[in-house]
Length: 495
Image: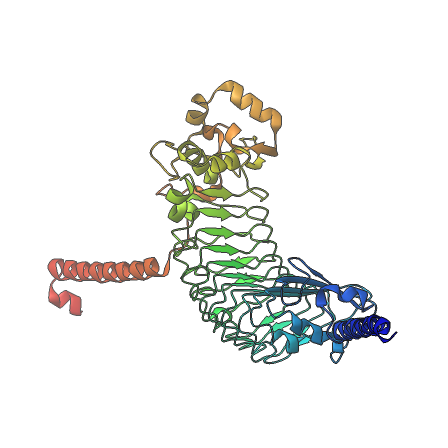
């Protein structure tokens, strides 16, 4: 009888032990939930683990915050500590969610974290030293947030491995001095689509290895060379779609290695003569959709390596060979490009250099741009504005004016059909290269003893001219005195 009760007791004991173990597992799981299945436990945050759902196995985690968001003291943040091998972590805040802070407490514990992002949050300020102990991060993206203030000192401090920092589409108004500090490997900084109006002196001075800086789609109106202190290794600077009105001399002189400068869609109407001095390695300059009316001679003397130039859609009335000459040999190469479309040019002799460039250019882009170039053509040759006509030796001359004073001689060498066709068109837009170069009129100001368009002398030329004039004046005075002494007795001179 006793022997029969033993199996029943053992069975009951085993059942009890199994039940306790099961309950222990449930308690353990409830105490330490996995971030990869947090969506089943929290109505405010859901995370997706790309590689694995196990503890300490996930490498990439993307989280969505909604239903009012989560507070800084919420215990849910502690579950991220069970995934110490995370390399990529992102937070996306839904319209009905909220995240008003950077979760630095958990970031400091993720020693293998390389990529971090926060998008659409309600963060308004990046405090000083926010990211100070997150030394493993290489790429940081904080975009489409409500950030309006980046604290003036050390907001991004001690990120020794950070190479790319993206702060696009926030509401940042000012870039203050020493905002970026101890970022020795930072190569790319993106600040597109903010509300930046002020860049303080030395704002980027510690970013000695930065190669790309994008400041497009902001409200910058004034640039000083001190804004770019320290950026000696910058290769690309994007300032498109701002409110810049003037580029002063030596503005970019600190950017010795700059190769690409984008200034499109601003309100620039003045480029001082030495605006681009110091940019000896510049290869691309884009200034389309501005308000330029004239290009001062010598503007491109300091950027003789430039091979891509876009001045389209401005208000230019003249662009002579003298303007282009420092760049001519680069533009005609295969990598070259120039665009002057959408300006206010007259079809006259100042554009005759385009015919030669079209013949010599190796670049298909250059040829195509010139073939599409349109200007205003006035075929009324009796117009007093064009009493002189220019003849260009296209093979040997790069634009030196040779004016012919006799219109009759000019007409003798023009095909009558060309002349009649031009008269039919009248004052209208014409494709320049479809007009025979011999038909291009020259304005009054072309007439001179040298036959060249008058341009203001440079400082050195003016200085040399003053020396010559002074020497000539002294010589002439000496000759007059010698003549008087030679032909008039000294007594007569004294009387």
